Structures are given as structure tokens and as C-alpha cells.
Length: 396
Image (cartoon, rainbow, N blue to C red):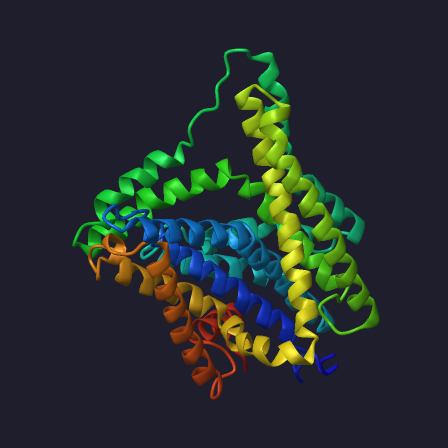
């Protein structure tokens, strides 16, 4: 096993930085496959390349879609707990400052939305209020709230309403209309048109899609789970945490296998399409969470192995600068794929986009290792930190 030195002198947990780096890396690779929400599939490619594109697309989305963001959300809740606890130890209530911090994150998110309509920072900033509300709840109350949110209660309500309406058919996602209009300005040569389109049409589409995808229930649940993991100190080295992650890995593997098998059998079990569609949606959210638990527990356990630790530790600076990397990947992606930049959306399928994504990741990773040698935080992290703790009154 790796060394028991899981933190530095400030108490920073190394494995969390590495895990956050893994999440941001996989998010970036998926965004590249999607051309940063500019879906376009070249038809002139040879059949073998189209087949390879299809395989890469399916594998990458199976591994990371709905899971990378979930890991990021869990660590968001964990970070809140750490900051809340640190301030409580100093006799301060962090909740008011946290709300100001979320307002700052909302601003970062809106700036990021200029380049990429799919930004999640602004949504995290608003939903993060749940952490301030539940910060002093008991562990049991937080767990119950997380479970109630995670089970997707609104979707279950809709599921049981469908049998009472024989004429009901599954409606198309309303967000698709907004995403369809994005082609008009993302393919154009004007950066201003793309920015305005992303900030207005794109943001509306993303907000609607988040509701349609159940993110307004699932994301706060993940925040609360991260906070609970922090309370139990399960990311720190101990026999208890090792046992917890081993058990979590076993349960997650079994749960995912059962849920995924059930998901595949839904069309045969339920003939009426609206009912099967709704149940498929709910079970998919559960199976994604099980797979997320599998990824997190597997990552934490691998991090403890000396043979793997040296490689995984390379992600720590990347995760430590997650805000900088998340925003700059949007800027880079828009320049690479959109019409006002290189316009590579016309020439890249999943294979070439993945190669570009890996290159951009390695470029960012190099920058992070270079920057962190002489700075304690990334550029945007330092700005966020300074603005978070800005004093209203001058100190004497």
C-alpha cells in the first residue's frame, strides 16, 4: 500500500485532488467528442472510420457520461464540508461566506457560458444553496434527504400517472429545440453571435435539459453525499475508510450489474412505450450512480497501491486547478471546434475528437505541473479564494 501520508501540512487530501483531476479529464474528453455541444457527424468518412467512431463514442459515454459530473458534484459537497469545518474550528459560521462564494461561482459560470453553453458551474452555484441549508443537520437527516432526492420522486410520480392517461405519449425533450438552433450561431464566423447565442438560447436549453434529465434532484443529492463522506473522514487513510471503500466497490459492482441487466430487460417487461421509457430513465439514473460509486471506490483503492499511486498522483495538480481547467477547456474547445475558430467540427468524428481531447488534456496537465511549482493555487482558484475572503471592512 502507499504511504499513510494522505495530506499535506494544510490538511489538503491528495487523493481528492487526483480524483477531481480524473473527473475533469473525463469531462473534457466527453466534451471533445460532443464538439462542446456542437453535434456534427461527418458523412464523408470511410465506413471503417465511422464504425470506429461509433465504438469510441459508445465506450466513452458508457464509462463517463453522467458519472464524471457526479464525481465532480460529490467532491463539491466534500469541499464545502472541509471549508465549513475549518471555519467552525475558528469559531466562524461559513454559511454566509459560502453563499457569497456561490454568487462568485455563478459569475464564473456565466463567463464560461460565453464559450460553452453546457457550463455546470452556474447550476452548481444555485443548487449549492442546499449545502448551506443542511450544513448543521444530523448525519441521519442529511442521508434521508440525499436518498429522497436521489430516487427521483418527480419521475416516479409521473410514472404512476401515465397508466391513468391512455392517450399519453412520451413528448420529445423541449431542450432539443434550443440545441437545434445552436447550429445557426456556432457554425458562423462571428464570435459575438456565438457568445450571445450561448448566453441566451444555450443557457435556456441547458436549464430545461437539466430539469428533463433529473439533474435538479440528483445534483443536490450528490452534494449531500459528498458532505457525508467528509463528515465520516472516508477520504483519509484509516482502516475504517479502507474497509468502507472495499465494501462500496463490491456493492457498486453488484448493484450496477443488476440495475443494468434490469434496464436492458425493461422493453420486454413493459410493452407500453411511455411507461418503459420513464422506467428506463429512472433505472438509468440509478445505474449511473452505482457506476459512479464503482469509479470512486476503485480510484481511491488504486491510489493506495504503490505501483499505481505514482501514475495517479500526476493528476493532483490538474485537480487542484479544476476551476481553471474547466473554464480554459471551454475556451480551447470553442476555438478548436466552432465556426469563429478553426471550425474542426466539420472534419472530426469521435476518433479524431478524442485524439484532440487527449492532446488538450496533456497540454493543460503540463501547464498545471509548471504553474503549481511556484503557486499554491491555480489562477482562477486564487482569484476565487481572494474574492471569497475579501473583507467588507478594512482591518486596523
